Image 1 (cartoon, rainbow, N blue to C red):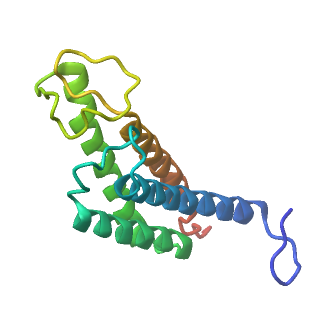
Image 2: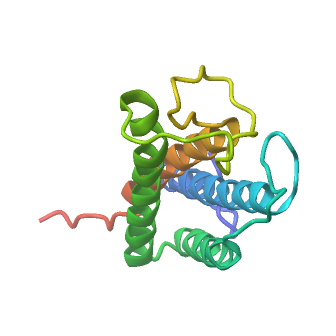
Length: 164
C-alpha cells in the first residue's frame, strides 16, 4: 500500500489512479519526443530529411499541444483531457486514412520521388501504393498507446458518485 505525504496509507484505488495518470502522461511525452526526433534529427533511412522538414510550424504546434495535454492530464483538468483525447483520436484516424487505407485498398499511387520513398519499410510494396514506413508505424503504435492510456486516465479521474 502506498502512503500519502503525511505518512498515512493511501487507498488502493487512489494509488492505482495516480499510476494510470503517470502512464498517460509518460506515453504522451514519449510520443511528443519521438515525433520531434523523427521530424528534426536525420537518421536515414528511418526518416529522410534530405529535402528538409517542410512542416516546421506544424511540428511546433504539435509539440506545444502535446505537452499542454500532458500537463492537463497531470493536473487532472478533465475538459482539456477530453479535448486532448479527441485530438489524439483524430490524429490516429488520419494516420489510418493516409497510410493504411491506400496501402490496403488502393486509391492513391506514389512514385520513386515520393517524400517517403527512401525511408525504411518492412512491409511488402503493393504496386505503386504508399507503403507505411517504420517511422510512421512506430508513431501510430505510440498514438494508440496514448489513446488507451488516456482513456484509462480519464476513467480514473471521474468524480466519485455520492451515495444516497
